[in-house]
Length: 99
Image 1 (tube, rainbow, N blue to C red):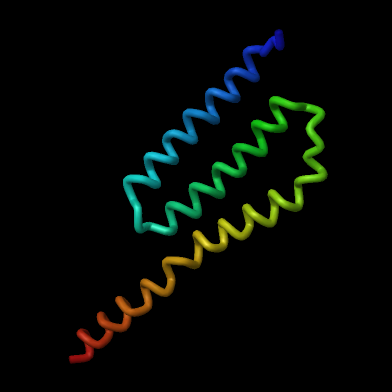
Image 2 (image 1 turned 135 degrees about the vertical axis):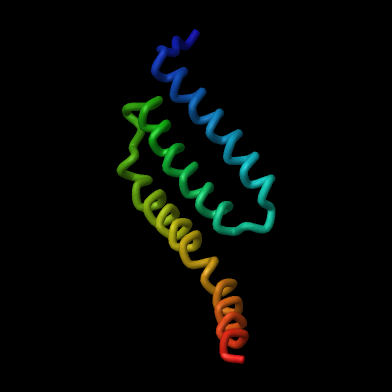
């Protein structure tokens, strides 16, 4: 039988708890892409950290470019996705103030 030390069990429990909380956050805000992409990026960071913690010999160097590109893409999407929705609101406020 495989023995699991306390730190590994704690890492798995933390990942499961965080995943559950992120899932509830996404479900409570179904149309908010900022929360969806930001949460996915944060979970991908946590998955990489937990994989490295559970499997110290895991070849993270082989998968680092994948994780880095995916996390960067999700963070950029999360940052710039609300911008197009904010532009029409700003234009209507300016038009209302000009009258």
